[in-house]
Image 1 (cartoon, rainbow, N blue to C red):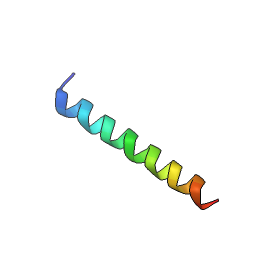
Image 2 (cartoon, one colour):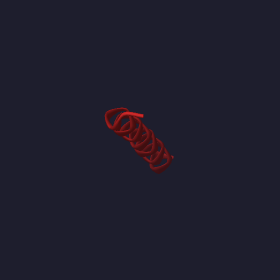
Image 3 (cartoon, rainbow, N blue to C red):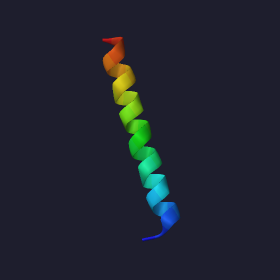
Image 4 (cartoon, rainbow, N blue to C red):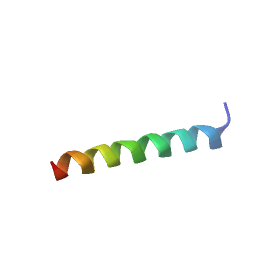
Length: 27
């Protein structure tokens, strides 16, 4: 697996977590 592909996947996953945390904080 390419490093850039793994980096993109990690960034996307991190962004998703941040969005979920922000949504939970608004509740």
